Each structure stands twice: as structure tokens, then as C-alpha cells.
Length: 97
View (cartoon, rainbow, N blue to C red):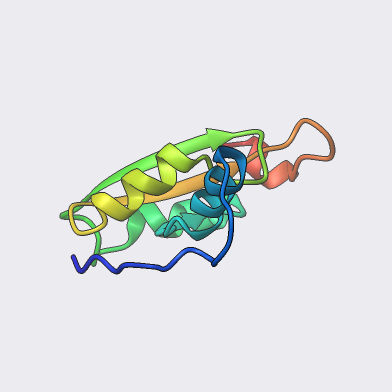
């Protein structure tokens, strides 16, 4: 895995600005599962049977920084998937999962 350096914008910095910058530029190698059919395709995919998968069930729209960081660090060893089921107006197909 190749690590890349990114320059921070010029000017003053405080912890809030730096935290937001890191959260915005943190690499994300997760895949979103939108429906039960996507999940079935994931399970039956012959190409990925030899690799372990990590599923995150969440109510949030955005992926948390620790999950993003884990997906970047272990992207060659694990596959990371997110199933977002919000409290309001959930997709009925995802609720079955």
C-alpha cells in the first residue's frame, strides 16, 4: 500500500480545523450496500470468497473515521462494507438485512 503525503493549506491552524481537514481527506475504501440484492451479490461473489469481509450496520449517513482508517489500512486483507439504515424513512429492502 502506497502512502501519500498531502500538504495542509497555508495559514494558521487550530485543532478544530485540523480535525475537520483530516476527516475530509481520510481515504475511504468502503463499499455501500443499498439493498438486499446487493448483499446477496456480495455473499455469492466467487472472486471475493477467499477474503474476509467486515460489515458495518449504522444509522448514520457518513462513515466514521475509525472505520475509514481501518478500510484504508487493511484494504488488501479485508473488504469493508457499510449498510446504512436510518431511523427515518429506511429502505424496506435494507431493513430485512
